[in-house]
Length: 190
Image (tube, rainbow, N blue to C red; front, top):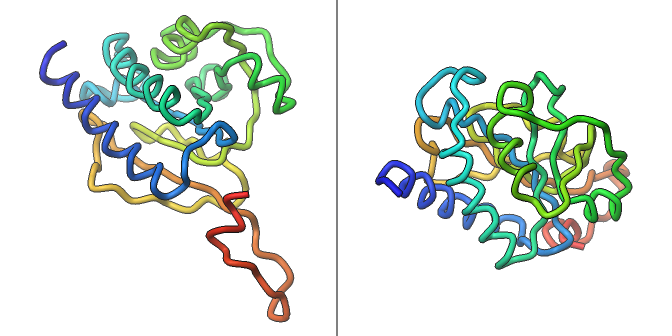
């Protein structure tokens, strides 16, 4: 592996450690991963998908999943309406309805294609409500996060040449001025 891909992996690992501190990864958590491999290698989104960049990103995410149990959903590109690739068992447990499509590099994106090819039993769904997310290259993952998203800052600002944004979610605070809230940080962990 060359130095560029090693740096991608090191930077993503550092960023994920920051996100983990903010939301405590475990097997109940679902992360949406939006990733433009074109942007990672310094090209315009949707123009130069890179299987090598996807492999580098996937390896780090696979390792984090094995360490923490966090579940992953990989967002496709706009040509598949930003549908998501995830493990079939997780989709069924969460009640996500599968759709009939298979991502490919030019209709789905390199990252979603790579995930589809490497998950044991992949399925594509249209909608999820994730607990957090990683957006590499401004792929617009917000539609797949639970209602109240909270930005998570990291010292890592880019993965390769792509802008990095991350978020966790929390339950809505409802009830107005007379409402009493439990410790807000503990409440969203349940």
